[in-house]
Length: 81
Image 1: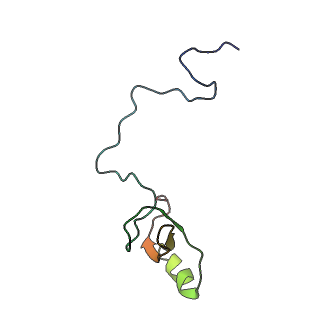
Image 2: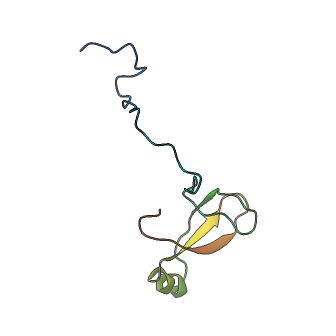
């Protein structure tokens, strides 16, 4: 197998020239912002009560901030995560 001198790794995906840059309206972060500290360093939290289970029906998901430890809920779509 011949190596391509342009690639740094044989597993590297080729970059196409017609890839469009992100628009300014598109969100860069996948995780929601913490309402207490404003950081995007959040993760999905465990379901703790029956209220969390019921709210999950309406796409309201619990999250926890890794910076300040605040637990909060956010409306999330299935494809948005």
